[in-house]
Image 1 (cartoon, helix red, strand yellow):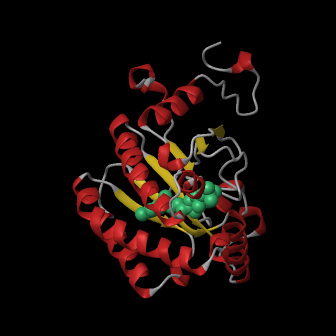
Image 2 (cartoon, protein in one colour):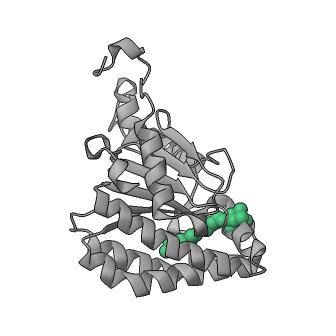
Length: 246
Ligand code: FPP
């Protein structure tokens, strides 16, 4: 499957909504946390694959602003999983030249989780390999509202004028300011919505939905998503005849 990928037409940035951990576990008669742990294994595999084929940015939705309303033991279990995964993987990620970045408001997390995250960001900040961007306590509306607040503040302080407020300036106030918009967004588990993931950044993203639950999502499934993306015609508002290959 990997051989069918056109290396000249790779998306620069792929974003993934890793969904279906709970249902996958339930089908196996296991706990939801068992599903999340298996989800971490899938993530390691897909991150490695993405780096190997030359994807420059991989963003994953690990915890949404709505996920706080899950049962308390699931939320705290997920926090433990993040922390354990960070601690056990960080060395290898760093050696593989992965640069870790975060989008979302991590101030709501415990001190130990925040420290784990900040240490990982600091350690890998000068790496030049794939940027592994993790959305934690992230929501697209939260990000947009935050941007509006900061723009209003800068306007009030005369740092910007009304006419400065363009799409590009707005992007620079989002948490994704250093990352290009994703060309491809994948959601697993059969749900067909974005749930506020990269709300502003996804206007021209190709959306790929698969019924496969995240823990069962394989390298080949990932390649298949990229091949599907490559077979789509990305007109970006133009007509077919205006595109370079026509
Ligand atoms: C969605 O499945 C998954 C999550 C809310 C958590 C995803 C987190 C991981 C895979 C761990 C990531 C780890 C690191 C270190 C970034 P779900 O629980 O919504 O599944 P369901 O829809 O079947 O219930």
